[in-house]
Image (cartoon, rainbow, N blue to C red):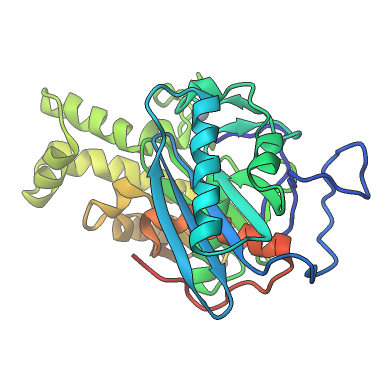
Length: 345
Ligand SMILES: [Zn+2]
């Protein structure tokens, strides 16, 4: 997910994979497209790439959407994976029709040229020229790749009807993004909300530093803390049950996570003054009361004249990155963004 050099995402084509005639050197041009190209098909495709499976959603005015999920083959070989993706693209064209723009949500780290640098989920992709591969799979479409957390933030912001939003997704890590004036920010790289430092002397993060938000508030971090207090390993179901029964080891572990998330929300509020903070991700969504607790702890940490932003639960669940990818494709196609709420699971 971290992308130290990649450009931002949003409705604009900040990371176009296709050649840009105005930029023969291949350097991505951050400018927005001039408008819809009448020669291109009006269909847009969002692709949400995961470590084990991929979700596709194609949309066009006046036609039912195309939704499909497929699994990567075993083995993690990038060539075999891309052959499956190409077959899925053919299937889409045959069953639904051509697309003129493709937005791809990626958890992997890619460089500015669109090459995968690291991806723990599918290590075989390291070194893959993803931008070039997408051009070959979708030769008739404009394509772009963006960070899945940024795209999830964009989709949640659109769904919530707000232009200024911070989004925190709590799962195996803490991902998310920032949307200001309806666009993903910052411009040069993704917003690494999970690596915001909330406890200088806190636990060690996967990145090697101490006290990152995700070292305190991710699902595994919360379960580890609960297990240490209980004196026995704690599964997600154990934690749910422990919370329901008011067990101290469960309540305290979740409290610490929600306080860390509240600290992040308050700090983001001071910096960016978003209209709302949205908290999602599978871990947060699976624990009743989790998001309201973040909201409460954030509310108590506001200050006179600068209350914390209201905290809302995410609405799109596991589909937020996919809908964000569709929005990215719409931006590439010059199509209007969906202001109305997208379908919810
Ligand atoms: Zn970190």
